[in-house]
Image (cartoon, rainbow, N blue to C red; front, side, top):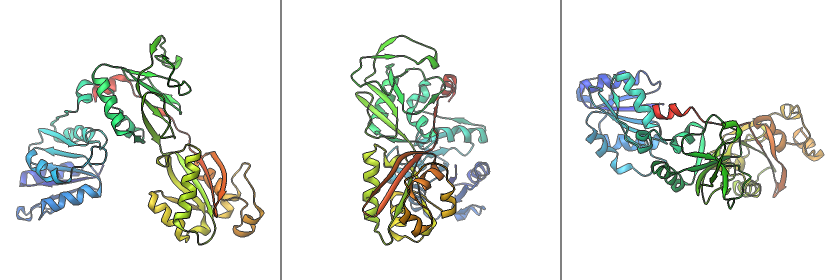
Length: 369
């Protein structure tokens, strides 16, 4: 992770430089009057605001009060705020102040403490109790969180010693954490019983189905419990073909409608894919930028070589040199075809998904963290 470190004394600058050296791309900032090699820090408020919006973690080397006052005007949400940490000048204590879980501040505090020879002062309840932290796990698995309140409720339930459920539309490897019960995604929400663990996890027995639980799925409306936290993996590639001169709005309407009809969340999309003759298609480029999806371009020769059976069009082949763009592009860059060619409004859409599995580490690892 790239760090932006602010220091306020000569001793603080030395420690900040030591920390920055371990994290490639990191930078140290300090008041010019110190005469250090750090970048100039004329206005702490402005500096903090820029770093809040720019990504990466903020590390304040000095009194924790300085950090608290600096970030206070910019704090918004635990799911979007960057990791913010305070380190005393001696490096004895590394304190994660914001985004301990989702932003990775807790893990970063432990890493910085290794550098300084100090101690990470972790205060988040699940960490202190050695319990499964679903938001940390989701970030490690690169899963988008759909349902912030449900995430909070799951942590609270585990802290109360209650059971929470887990089901996944994808393979799950490793032992489930303490307090988490596996439920088949095929079971209805009204099914009152659940096996505590599948044969793969080596336990049996009947238990009441938890009211609260997690589902790993591509469908952000899929349910499995009375209250369900949906975690969405970014594994879907959307292949797109379109007529020349089509608008961003027209493309967006068709693509999002196709995804909705097939119960695939836009949060699951990791890229768009199409033929290289569309590199200058303004509407398509604007759509990709608006959605925050990278777009991959392939030649007609590359797409023609993709093995499989695809919906062929003589008109498309005469126009761009390959009989199908959307399906071939989706499979070439993404994997197994999920949605076959859908056409409408001058747009063709297909989607594929890359192989994916979630992984649980050993229970002892949660307690060590």
